[in-house]
Image 1 (tube, rainbow over the protein chains, first blue to last red):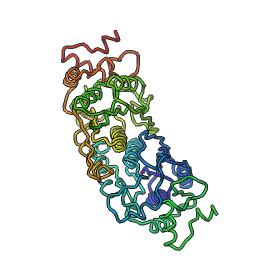
Image 2 (cartoon, rainbow over the protein chains, first blue to last red):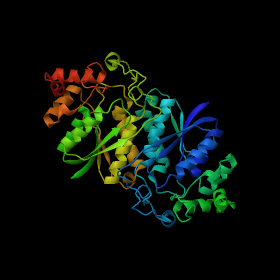
Image 3 (spheres, rainbow over the protein chains, first blue to last red):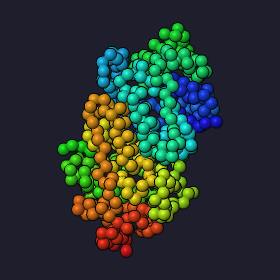
Image 4 (cartoon, rainbow over the protein chains, first blue to last red):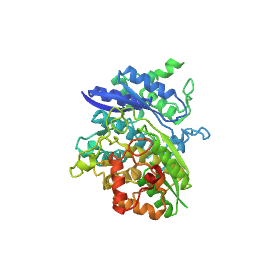
Amino acid sequence: MKKAVVLLSGGIDSATTLYWAKQKNYACFCLIFDYGQRHKKEIKSAILIAKKAKSPYEIIKIRLPWKGSSLLDKRLEVPQRYNVINQKRKNLIPSTYVPARNIIFLSFALSFAEAIGAKAIFIGAHTHDYSDYPDCRIGFFKAFQEIIKEGTAAGINKKSIKIYTPIINKNKAEIIKLAKKLGVPLELTWSCYHGKRYPCGKCDSCYFRAKGFQELGIKDPLLVISS
Amino acid sequence: MKKAVVLLSGGIDSATTLYWAKQKNYACFCLIFDYGQRHKKEIKSAILIAKKAKSPYEIIKIRLPWKGSSLLDKRLEVPQRYNVINQKRKNLIPSTYVPARNIIFLSFALSFAEAIGAKAIFIGAHTHDYSDYPDCRIGFFKAFQEIIKEGTAAGINKKSIKIYTPIINKNKAEIIKLAKKLGVPLELTWSCYHGKRYPCGKCDSCYFRAKGFQELGIKDPLLVISS
């Protein structure tokens, strides 16, 4: 079996990406980040999902002392409906953007992949709803592919490591549909920016999740369990 | 004053790069990594150098559980004279190569730079002696520059952050000569792969340091102090 490193955050997107990679017969090694996000709930979700998928995982703990994001700095407010209100405006980046986050995450994934001889890295980024996150766009992943070619032992020795973004062009409803087909344990996923007992229902992440389920006309199994 | 993030390891190369940036009137913010290297001595050196240069610093602690390098894995031996013996052979990468290390380091530097509004990142990489480290080559830094353009808020908003590699084409003797000119506290720098009381004198890093001083016909102030 070919090995792959899969970035796993605990949300629907990365869980679906993991199950997609598993269906493609990759032996998946999950990478979970404890990066000082507002709550640990998504980390717990990620662990539960990895266990459910019977995929080994590593947890990487990092801290960005400079913060620079409302996801890391509790003094800043997480905006509500930011992307809903501003989604037609170009290059307006919400305060939830964490400087260089996906670049950091992919760097670790790349190190992991090189060390274990994996040929693939999977990341559940997509641009549909959050079109203003620069590190979720196709151009960014293409540029990162060049980094692998130029800056790693694997690249030099023509042992390519490829980045896969299977859901990059899908919207939330399409991702949930795919997740259902692949048997993703959606009840274990967590999307809310806040780590309370129940999802807040107000943040962008809750909004797009609810909208996705609504469009498909099905109930969110997380809310069924919570209620 | 323009702000810059400077990667500082405790060796001659990064210390010289810091002093070079200072001379160019950058307000330098140093970034030091505790990444599970074999010893903490180089971290202590980096802190002393930052303090001597009156530059603020952040220490980032990371662990790569997959290791994949003799610099991280104490069960592996650090090769002696590897680069000396093999320097004419192409694409032969020593066991001291840490998978994706400079990619990880630059990612954090980029996050730091974005968060504080720095326009420059300085890294003391050079290809002269260690020609087989893929992440020390000009092509790699060019590729990383593209990442900044494509994958960050700064890039999107045309607020460019530039990577500078002022010593990339210099050999050790040339770097030491520049260091002397810039007033780098060479007695505080540490190069040896081992963290004992005195440099081992046998590893590649000791070899190239000694060779550099020898070529200039001057004594290494670290050894003067040690002896």
